[in-house]
Image (cartoon, rainbow, N blue to C red):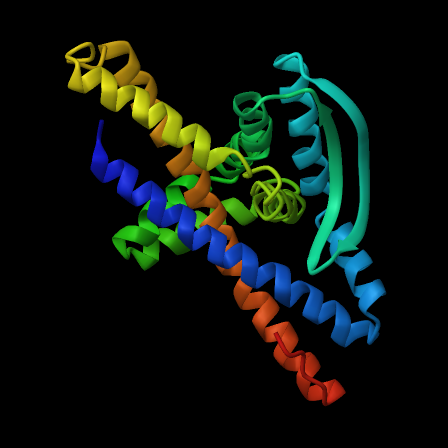
Length: 249
């Protein structure tokens, strides 16, 4: 396994999580500044990210069907549960930790696939690489070509909505740690007993392709989020000045 790729994938994922949390808070903050009503701000947030929310819940539903899990209600409706904002849900019944974890991770997998498809259509995969190399000229050239793409702003919006709704929720992640620890223990025992000596070439290839797929998708999401963070920051600053109000985060 290429541990360097694993390391950078974790770094990209952590950066994306931080951007997601900032965007979640400040988009609601902008809504609050615009309306001065928390309920209306939540509904504005819900409708802004509705395409991503729909894909998130649909991913749960499709994965549950593939795993033959009993599926209950499919809902899209914002509601506060304590301090947590729930935007949709898919009820699953009679499911163990492993299948629950697979259903829980589905939005990240399906969302990453959608991000990668849209991002490559807009040439954003190349944009990420040039940004890492610091080639500003190449970045501007790619952006000029991307903006000329038919319906560019619509695709960019969909990319933004999906990228910021694909992260699994706390309820999706509830069994992740015990499942990971279980398989880690199985592998450790296999290595200690000499049952696992080498990783098959097929497994290595699948693992490398999966890491490349996730790194490309999450990298595109980070690039898009950085652009929207700048836009939201400027918009919020303008609203602070015009309304003479500030949101405490």
